[in-house]
Amino acid sequence: MKETPTSPAPEESFEAQRPRLLRLAYRILGSMADAEDVLQEAFLRWSDRHDEARSAEAYLHTIVTRLSIDRRRTVEAAKETYIGPWLPEPLVEQPGTNTMEREEEISLAFMVVLESLNPTERAAFVLRRAFDFDYREIAEILDKSEANCRQLVSRAEAHVHAERPRFETNRAVADQMTDAFVQACHGGDMDSLLEMLTADAVLYSDGGGKASAAMVPILGADKVARLFLGIFRKRPSDVSLCRLNVNGMPGIAAIQGGQVVTLFTLEFVDGRITNCYVFRNPEKLARATAVAAGLSPGEDLT
Image (tube, rainbow, N blue to C red; front, side):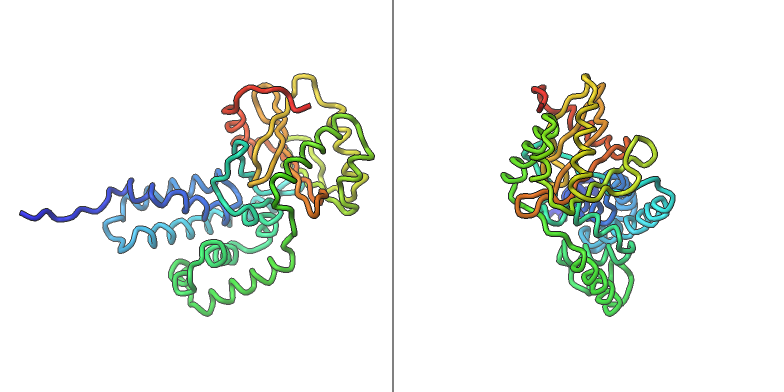
């Protein structure tokens, strides 16, 4: 007797899509913690409804997108009362790894630009430009007309293209410059720091009211350099530094008592530092602490 083919178990079909779904959710939400929560909820819904779905891929992308939009609205509400600058949760990995691919689409500068889009615009833009869905598919996912979806993407593109930052994608240059920056800060070398920073360099520091941080962006090479020199000069003796990947680029974590207490990463244009992103809010450093705990013990960078 010929056996009837069986469909994959819901767990198998979901896991096959998980990496792509996680990339989608992170780009819409700007938070890996929120993205993982969305995937958990999506799996529960998939487990209950998978027999009704014509396509696992279509159903899962639809439910993850819609859940992400709903979660993103909650994030937008939280930003209204957030203390100090808001930065997306950093995507932290061990050095030499990059599970999200295409650094230009997960760079912090690019993720910051996406923060200015409303949740539906952001989802439409990500689906079209990062995942290459056609407008018919986007319309089905968002439950809108194709014409409306074209307008959403067009508005988002106009804004992103106007604000989209240039940045250095040469990883060797970024690694070399980051190491030189740390050594200059440790050595108190103001002149070297000023040579590395562009005149209009900006530092964004996210403490969320839970850790000390600059309440507004710090503008100008001189102010940025002096702030970093002060931080390194006052660094407690029990704080060590290690390298991590932050959104596809080199980052530096300060570890105290087994916890990452500060994480920073730099962005470059033509071999000079344009933006500095400093994370101090412990709620955005949990992933960094977990990743740092998996590193082999090594010497302090300084």
